[in-house]
Image (cartoon, rainbow, N blue to C red; front, side, top):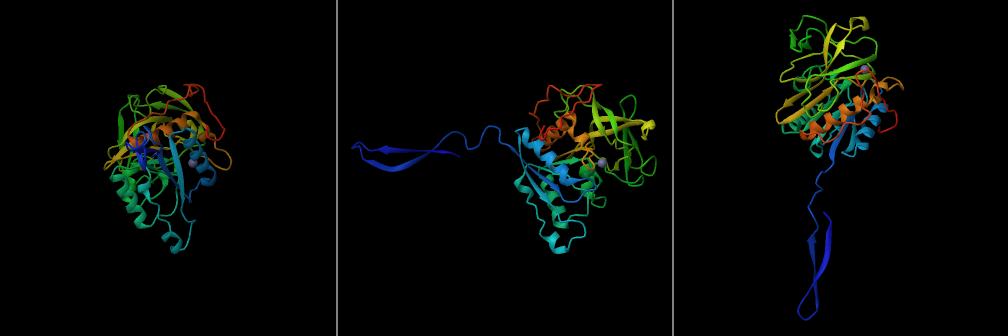
Length: 308
Ligand code: ZN
């Protein structure tokens, strides 16, 4: 809050004590969304990918971003005991983490935070994590799991949801990375509204056979997993949302990066999905517009500049 200092004068013209008057509303009309990215362990190069995510979020002008980094693998218990992110300071938590289990208090803290209305954004391999954390599986709906873990969810040629029971069909995997078409399955959802019905995503892993409880799962977009590309011959979910208590969870399995190749993360479509998904997880609304150079049905569009 900014203040204006004025002086009130009495009839005799003598100055009295200063009076503090408020100027305007206490907060701006559209306060920035506070994001906490968690990283520290991943089978991907999180030291390079977190800065890309952070720059994209900040460059949009809609977010402020902090990063909480866990101890490394095989760290001493004392190191883990000092990992105590305060979720209550943030509107949305983004996971760029795929590693060892977090301490129980951190797990319980995230569960309570989302249940009370906090947002959670899951990017790519973050859905590989925490197979033995039941609430996490509820929040993400589908994760990188074996075929016996839970149900598989795909979309048939008529657009109907197909649920395959655990133990049947493939477990999680992907063929060699390639460019593929993202097909929008809900054109009215705030995250996907205005996107072309189909758009070409830059070269990326195409996750298939994701497994989990998949309760209350709402699929926003899919991709056809081509058998000639090491896939399954059906439409696999690429973007979905799930309510958890009063909170919202957004997942995209796009966004592979390895070594210094972050081609998938430089796709303008991917960036829009992450920005809008994160905003929606935080607020339930999307104000971030789609860029004019969004990908088309046949053309990849990428921007490699930091924060673009
Ligand atoms: Zn990957």
